[in-house]
Amino acid sequence: MKIRRALVASLLLWLVTSLLMAALPGWFKDSFLHLDEELENATAEGKRLVLYFHQEECPYCKRMLEVNFTQRDIEAKARAQFHFIAINIWGDLEVTDLRGKVTSEKDFAHDQRVQFTPTLLFLDEQGRVTFRLNGYYPPERFSALLDYSAQHPAPAGSFQDFLAARAGPQPSTELHQDPSYLPHPLKLNQRPSTKPLLLLFEQPSCQACDELHREGLARDEARELLGQFDVALVDFGSTEPLITPDGREMTARDWSRELGINYTPTLLFLGTGGQEVFRTDSYIRPYHIATSLAYVATGAYQRQPEFQRFIQERIETRRESGETGPPKLWD
Image (cartoon, rainbow, N blue to C red; front, top):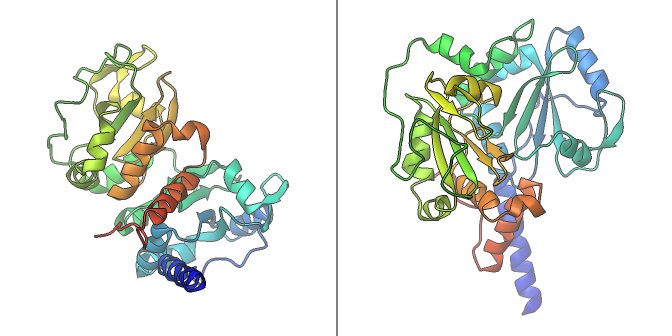
C-alpha cells in the first residue's frame, strides 16, 4: 500500500510539473553561458542581449513561453533585435559573467537578486541593465517593452514615459482609494502605528490596477493580511506633494521616479525601520499577491531572502494538507 501511494504521489508530481513546463522557443540562443562572449556577439550584430531567468513549475514562465513568445509580432521583434539567453535559477551549469567570473546558474541568479520568474534583464552594449522585468507582462505591454529596449542608443527616459508617449493623453479617472488607507496628503514620517508599510503605486486608467483591487486585494486571505500593514495609495504620475518616510517633501511623481517605479500597480513594502524589504513590479495573479503579502507580514523575508523558496514552502504546505495540483492562477 505504501509503495502504491508513493507511485501515485510521484505520478501526480510528474503531471503537475509537466503542466507547468513549456519548451523554450527555438530562436533562443544555444549558449555555453559565456556571457561576455554572448554580449560581444549580440553587439556585433547590432542586437541587445537579454538574460531570461526561469525555473521549472513556474506558471508565469509557462504563460510567457506559450502566450507571449508565440505571438507573431513578439517573435519577429525578438528574432530581429535581441539575443535571448536562458538561465535556470536553480541550475548548476557553469556561467561566465560579464566580468569573466566563473560561477553556477543558481549563484549567478542569486548575485543578480532574482526573486521572481521569469526575470528578464535587457543589457546595452556595455553590459549595463537598461530594463529589468521582474515577472510577467501581458503580450501588448511586453511587445511595447521590446520596442523600448531595442532603441539605439539605450533609452534615456523611463518605460512609463515611453508608454505614455505612445498612448497619448489618458482620460481622468479615480484611483482606488479605500477608507482604511492612510489619508492624503501623505505624511509617511508621521504614521500612527509601527506596522510595516505597503505602498501601492498606481495611476488612473490602469486596467491592471483595477484588477488588483477587484480580484487580488478583495479575496479573504489578502484582506486579512492587509490588516497587518499601513497602506498608502500613491499616484505615481501626480504632482501632489507628500512627505516620505525619511521626512523629505517632494511630489509623488518625483518620489516614484527616485524609487524606479516603472510599472503600475507596483506593491512596495517597507519594514518597520522604513527600509524597502520587497516589491512586486509586474503582472501577478491573486495567489502571488497574497503570497507577497504573507512574505512580508509574517516576517518570512528576514529568515528566507529567496522569495521563490518561500513560494515553494507554501506549495509544500498545501500538498502536506492534502491539496493537489498547482495554484489556480488564470481562472
